[in-house]
Amino acid sequence: MTDRTVHLPVAAQDSLDDVVGIGEHAEALGYHRAWFPETWGRDAVTALAALADATDDIGLGTSIVNTYSRSAALLGQTAATLQEHSGGRFRLGLGPSGPAVIEGWHGEEFDQPLRRTREYVEVVRRVLSGDQVDYDGDVVQTRGFRLRQTPPDPAPDIDVTGMGPKAVELAGRFADGWHGLMFTRDGFADRLDDLERGAELGNRDVDDVRTTFVLPCCALPDGDQARDLVRQHLAFYVGGMGTFYRDALARQGYEDTAETIYDAWQAGERERAIGAVGDDLLDALGAAGTPEEVRERVAEFEALDGLDAVAVSFPRAADRPVIDKTLEVVAPE
Image (cartoon, rainbow, N blue to C red):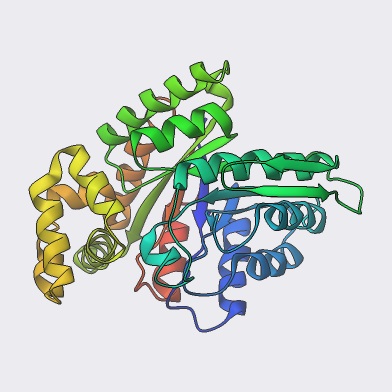
């Protein structure tokens, strides 16, 4: 059975209490896990620590923290501490992010993203084991590091994100899970082939690699309003978040549309970019409309072969009433 999880919003929330309140609401509705992405808003570690204090049962996770702004050893410490603080409910999601975030915001060179991701997974696992970490990688070097507290038991699982074939192959080879974002159903199925190939290279069973599909959702009585919010959200990601989402969309058969959205957004023509997200593309990438329409759409995505969890996410401009309504509409039965 596919789990239903939730991506807590990083935008349009007035306070940390609002973010925690959404997580509490998700727990009350029966969602399996609350993920917190880390971009330009509140940091994921503080937010998840606050949510751990306010909840009892819902799983917690990062989706994602990047592999440039914190060292691998520090991410291992952080994962161990959040696992302890949450009573064993934490799952670490990490990935390289992209140049717009790493170079533009953090001032770090976006070099060797795949190699860096692999080495971070390896080092974090060694930190979580409690053994001394002496690691001499191409990107990461750590000498004489060991947790001073008892290591978490069980250690939290480590997921990675990825959009291209090689990134998803890496997830299958080394990680405990993979998070996919901005995929059509056919595009997701194509990447599952890469995940399986990676598992084979790592002599692993692909069924042991947990797959999570991040699905933009918005359900309102005014279905057109809901669709407009998701349309704007998709245009922002394809047009304004570097080239990775543009390229991923192009690989899925939407090359001309992806270029149109990207070029228009970069030129400051936001309305033209949003208008380029047609109804067919909107329905291929998200679940937006009336409550009945959204329930049907989410069920279609959940029926994908090889999928373990859907992570309900929200348009970046959604306010609290829109988020709460959508949470309730697509709550686990």
